[in-house]
Image (cartoon, rainbow, N blue to C red):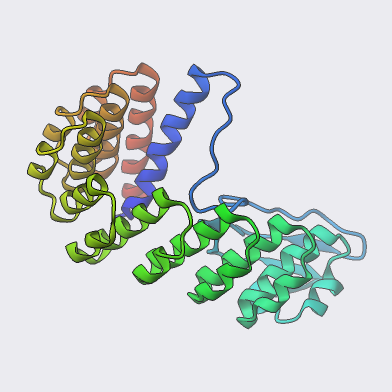
Amino acid sequence: MMPKQKYWLYGILIFAIAGIVLISGCVQQEARTGANESGELEAVAKEPGINKTEIEETKISGGAIITGGAVITGGVAEDMRNINSTERCEEIYSDIGRKEWCYRWVAINTKDAIHCEKINVSAKKNSCYTDFAINTKDASVCEKITNSAVKDGCYFTVAEKINDTDLCEKIANNNSKRKCYISIAMNTEDVTVCERITQNVEKHICYARVTDDASVCERMTDSADKDWCYGGVAEGTNDASLCEKITDSARKNSCYNTIAMYTRDTSMCEKITDSSIKERCYEVVQKLVQEEQEE
């Protein structure tokens, strides 16, 4: 079974598409990871002096390099994961952008973030530091990042990866900090982590999501907080009856959509009131089922 994070991404994609249809001219917010090049698929074209250059499935996901590629020079294939010097990058690439992309590989391969320093574009340099931190689980490199949102994303992702609550404390944005604690509390099923959240409503939501106890939600007075709490517990337990308790239609649709992804149950899509989101829900669930059948 595919990890739940993937279904969250499908759900986010559905609502992003709906948002584009309903609100023209709306600028989408960058993902919380802060990695400016998250989801990027880089393909390198033929260069002078290079017989053929081919990059196979070189992807950045949440700032982390997850698959490799091959560079073919002079008829000899070279795996990017085996390139251990920036000098080699300069030999196989003439374009500065591609050289800097290669430097990121060298930093990861040699476990030495100093190679990120050769990158001139700050956004790419920050992304290099993020990739390095995630791959090596070395959050100290996050401090080198100049963009505050990207830095927060770096700390968040490493903290979540190694379940280190001390790294959550380094996050400047309070909302992201709370989410970091909640994520680790859920990963470790440790309700004591929730105690580190200073905001009472978020603390109760943390308790509810870790324990899958919807009774905590019922004690909340603010309807938006209650909706968020019910949605979190519903998605954690695949209990669609809790989605029905949500008053906000968009949040309720999101709840049914997420459970549909987790359970591959298209009957959950039928409960969605937004026609475009409902249609996309059916498409994605059917695709997930097909992918599992082909595995």
